[in-house]
Image 1 (cartoon, rainbow, N blue to C red):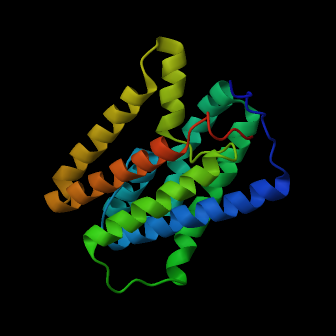
Image 2: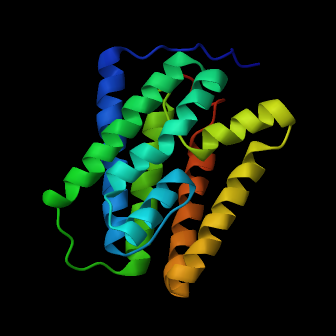
Length: 203
């Protein structure tokens, strides 16, 4: 019989480097995503779609759409998680808008770009998750509704993403939406396969 896992608290320095690495990796994924004209799921996907439609920057829209979810995060996850998530969202909003000034992509194959984008984004999210943070949004709402009503969190996320990609079908070409969906599925598979509480526990 294996011994129970011991919870490990990260230091401030460890959290800082993880936030810098995780948000930079996710920002690189977003750079690839937007250069291909794709979207993704959850609130990041909503912010990307709104940025295409309105011309406002992703960083600004991503920060704004996450604001309502901080209250739910505080109630559901507590102040530590909420503060870390706020910092992660703010960093991603800043880095995602700044990165195109330093990295320019002139040519990228859509399939290869989708696979690389999903891999980089999935790894970036795992880094943040393992340091007790998230990028906010629908995941927090889904957990809150599950607590209050019993409606499964995964179903809430699927409904939101289904609605988002349905709307995208009316404003984007079908191949673009299909590549976007492929990328979102791969990101979720990476997280589901590699981020398990029975393998890694830390705060």
